[in-house]
Length: 240
Image (cartoon, rainbow, N blue to C red; front, side, top):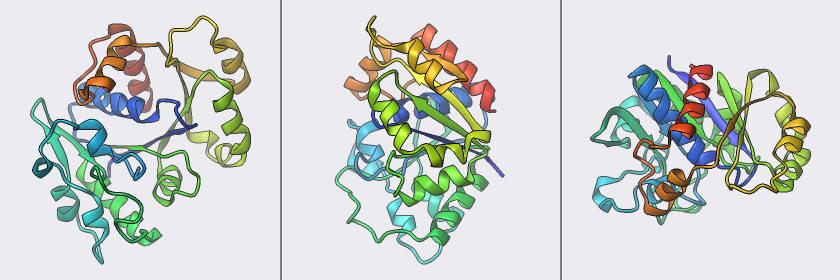
């Protein structure tokens, strides 16, 4: 059974990018099979990570969730891979799909999907959405062996956590706190926010290279920024 890692946190805290870079680093550290899964239907994964790919080269996990029962073969058919990382797979929805494209999944269906992913890979990293009503994200946090809690040094992040304090308190025993500095701004209250949350284990530095990847649609490539990669590597080692 693969290790299940959920990445969650406040809106715009860098969850998706951090989850992806963490998954890539886990792959580089272990050279084992890794699956990166996003249940987000507001910003479907395939359109975000692979904006330059042909439509025929991309698949949607929605097709597997739409079936009566989910088997490993169904999930495997929906995995998108890149040539440079042969044992690393992406699972998510395609651009143009939304919450009305498929029927809402049941808890049993989500558990089937998670079980298949655990069987297919040694590590499964789930990029959870911020909405607490999202079933797949909520169940990913419930089922996860380790939870990465993303924090950004701003009032928006603090307000989000104040409104969702109960759900995060319930998973605190499995949580690794990571602060993400999305801007290189001297006025960001980094120390104050870290002190407010307490026990922030890792602080990801602002990365121009990461910003470039986001804008150019090349997030599937390993980041070249040595300072950023050093921290994400430490984070990966802490969860594997």
